[in-house]
Image 1 (tube, rainbow over the protein chains, first blue to last red):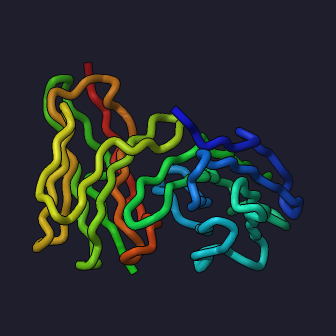
Image 2: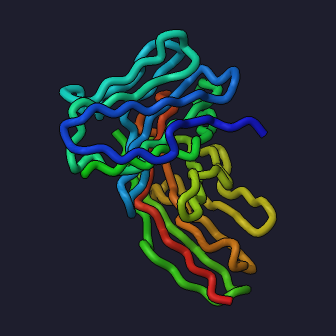
Length: 114
Length: 113
């Protein structure tokens, strides 16, 4: 079964440093999502791409977070500078697109900011 | 936009018993309701979903029911097994046609052998 690939699996960084996460969606999936999951809570959408275009980034803290999907395939999420409150699991998901198309999640990157 | 509330936050059942998790949603236009299972340290995985043109869907030991009038949907797990222990999340579209999801806060299910 095809899976969404994410790296790194774990990341520890000091506050004020820059971090970046990478995601490779399932082949053929036009829609890519970045979610943040704080321990003990449900995933919260940060940004959604349709191919290379941003569809929804209303919940992305744009003063410090940025995301790109330049060629409409893999994607990078960056945080600069990182803050203590950014410690969370960052989950990437993809879907074929279209109405109510199921989301498939990657294993996530667990970020710890010290 | 959508808002989803999920109850209970924790649930413990004896092996073999049934478990029920309930969610309510706010947007009457929502038409797709998936359930995800997340084992400790692993990714959320879709286990079942229902669309608003049906009231119930079953897949072996799991079922989901939908009451559009009351705007709530429930996950039912029968004959629970220890491997069912996980956190379960309900979700609904953030807005019609957006194809992204608003997740509930999760239910930690523990099946006691």
